[in-house]
Length: 158
Image (cartoon, rainbow, N blue to C red; front, top):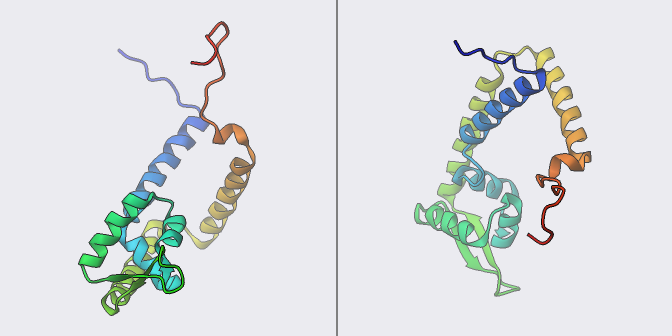
């Protein structure tokens, strides 16, 4: 009979946060969802493709591919920037604005469902705890580096 090792509190927290993170990431459409782009354009109006890439944090090729799909659906337009022809302006069409409103409503309903099991007090407590963690994690460079320390006797330059 295989004995199951008791998980530490830290392991339990990591597992639960991983599950919650995946649920949020996929439930909200992932890193570069078309919905996210629609909502950003609705909020910011006309932006350059470069600005949109920076907001979302993806590469040029990926951005062009996603924008092409949204443009084919008639939800946005891309036009050369008037002042700098090297830049492309991205804006919602009327259909895109309507779609963004629908996405915003659906997202609000999803967010309500995600946290309906918590009381207002519990939500406030959770926010405080997550902010405390986020602040500590931002300040701790050990968390931002995934490099292993060099092993003794290991060859340099590998």
